[in-house]
Image (cartoon, rainbow, N blue to C red):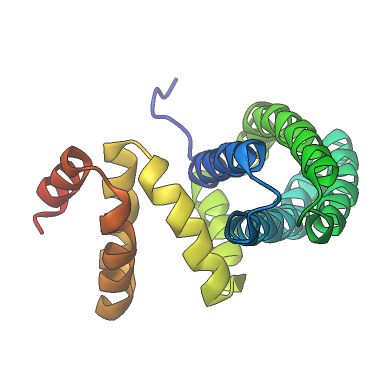
Length: 218
């Protein structure tokens, strides 16, 4: 029996989503609804979080669920149902954002609804990382799963990709970060790789940047 770990299509993006959700929730909890600048930042960050969550579940539905269901019918039923719930929650959270300025009650409602959304998503992602990975690994080779990942990446807009990288890269461990950026250096145009480095550099603590520099021989 092989002891080589299987490819986990969820690993990196879920780390980024968990980090972004935690950050946005903390922002919502401390926001002063009477401070226009704070409210503007909150609305931008929560709006961006809703954008990336909506895009993420759409990619999963179109690519990952379709692949699983094609070889293991019914395996995605639970998560597909939860995706419909998440779409409704995203719409509700978007509708709350314009009500926050000058309205402490609306700010509190946003915070509590966002907390519930984050809590459920944390559980939801755990199920995907266990049950859905098991379904993929039982029916697909790692090469095929990498192909699914590449389809998702290829369908992302530049803005969507930049937002995902902004939240993924600082929250990966050093080996994961080096692996991701090493692959990008090998396969993407030089200017794209350098642009990503400039994006992530201010987001890494000194020791994290040093580890990355050493790993990539920058």
